[in-house]
Length: 115
Image (cartoon, rainbow, N blue to C red):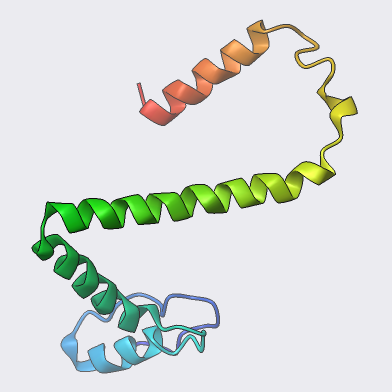
């Protein structure tokens, strides 16, 4: 038997049988948030499918618009935060030299790649 979802969780583990599936699905959508992502996902998927069906030109235009919006958002954050920069902390940039930075960069790279 599936218990009620705790606040902030994704609704617990899915039920093993289909007899409690409706309760589980109801618990997933009862987050009380502003937008129910379960309802938004099919709308976004339908919109993207519609743009792709219209052709490569419209898809490329949408890609350009969305990329421009992302770049504008990043630029706005950088410009808004640039007034709070303390340039006195920039020097010395590498107080221990570049070797520790290169070693940590290699460590992070190989941790990410998984080699």
